Amino acid sequence: MSVATNNLAREVLPFQVAASGYDVEKVRRDFPILQERIHGKPLVYLDNAATAQKPQAVLDAIEQYYRHDNSNVHRGVHTLSERATEHYERARSVIQHFINAGDPSAIIFVRGTTEAINLVAQSYGRAHVGAGDEVIITALEHHSDIVPWQMLCEEKGARLRVVPINERGELRLEEYEKLLGPKTKLVALGHISNALGTINPVRKIVELAHRRNVPVLVDGAQAAPKIKVDVRELDCDFYAFSSHKLYGPTGLGVLYGKAALLNAMPPYQGGGDMISSVTFEKTTYNKLPHKFEAGTPHVEGAIGLAAAIEYVSRLGMENIAAHEHDILTYATEKILEVPGVRLIGTAREKAGVLSFVLENVHPHDIGTILDQEGIAIRTGHHCAQPVMQIFGVPATARASFGLYNTRAEVDALVAGLHKVQEVFG
Amino acid sequence: MADLRDLYQEVILEHSKQPRNFRELATANRKAEGYNPLCGDHFTVFLTVENDSIKDIAFQGSGCAISKASASMMTQSLKGKTREEAEKIFHNFHELVTGNRHPNGDQPELGKLAVFSGVSEFPVRVKCATLAWHTLNAALEGKQDPVSTE
Image (tube, rainbow over all chains, first blue to last red; front, side, top):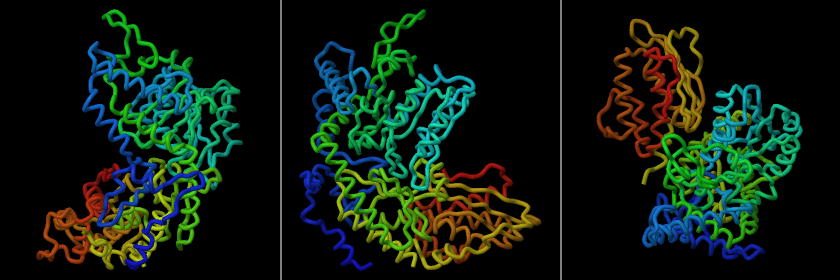
């Protein structure tokens, strides 16, 4: 590939304002890291399903907290502790409104989606799943929504059932209906597949489970940054997501749960803040949500996530979803023009994830060559080895889009793939 | 800046497309599996060892260009070598790909394997280049569990 072609591909088109008024060039200026140059080339960040970059508003909120408000929460009577507590609890209600939960006490801060799922498996699961019972997951799950249930089933002598997918990477609902039965104690599934981008029909799945009084946990790690999530409309019993994929800081996640379920569940971890009173004879646990938040929490994480949510809410989740859909549609069309490309995952309902393989080139080699062009993608099994096995590939290359990606960046990706083919001749 | 051509040298690309000794070895009396969980690379190395020397060597599996070419060229360079010689070559190879050895220095013992010197500019690819070698070590030591580069 010539240098000239490369530059042309990177040139930013002047008119990228969508019908909604979504101005991606303006949005990009909110993300300082997008100015980075990698191997002398402008950064093209297409690894958003792994983690998203952070807008200035998030960086400012965290700095502001440490410069002016830092203290422990729910502890002291002094002013800083009051301020820190106020910010921390305010973050909880920002999140509550973002996912349309009924009450802030239904929002539990955890370390990430993985810990949220482990919390439900260890607390709800150990109390309600017994020998001979069944837990249903799907073939699309991330390892974090497989292994906690496997551990639970192994401990209890229960059985893990898996909803299969079709050749597009869509759940086979008729098989799901067959799996649901009197032994089913819980259903857990991802809202959007991290490996394939498939958007699952969560509302329908919840409805079918609820007909049998089976609760449903939704892994929303990929969905929360991509589409409008309404937990009451979905009617799911648990919803888990991570801050860092939603343009917030790492180390923080959210578990939403219906109050009746959370209230009846035993604590997950013991420690400070999760108790009302402690004697050596007996401990009385704190009320929700504190019952599930042992120890000093990730205060600046919660504040940073609230800033991220306020940021994406200003842009509008519907506008973000429409923008990413436009980028995905354009990328799908362009990448199929590259000879030897095979898309892995072609669901009709799909969010901004493009998983693919290139004939005769291992994804790892694609990743290294694209990196030299400043393009960051993920290569490997994406913590979803069962999905790879179904499609008969050891790994894929995955470009995943965020609210700041442009069509020009898709062009850079395609130019990069031509370079890969040039190297591999 | 690291140059892609230093990494993907012609010899490496050629071996990755047409790996040598890429088969199961019927006469093997040692074998081991190697796995890189990060990228899914997976190889089996077969050895026929007699009197502490490698009479025959072959491999099978799948992986990226670097890991496959490294496995292929490893089989070529180790056939007929004693165990001690093989271990020394691995040591030198490891030093080369981790950048602890001057690539332009005199290193007759590495022979054609010197083409892997470019790997040292790409630290995340060191595991690719050494996977087959770690697997070889496991086979020589008669280890039962698959080796992992993680």
